[in-house]
Length: 68
Image (tube, rainbow, N blue to C red; front, side, top):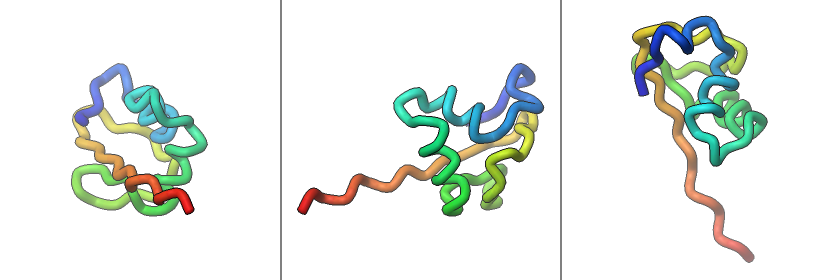
């Protein structure tokens, strides 16, 4: 997703949690720290990074592990 001007300056984890309301902010933060987020195709691991307007962000959400 491309960040708009309204998103600029927000914490990355907070903004992505608003984009993916099915994920909690703590889950989004963990995914970012695990290297599952990117900005303009470069991996970012800092959940407090400020969002940049016009940048393209991606968040990888692994499939759930099968129940034992």
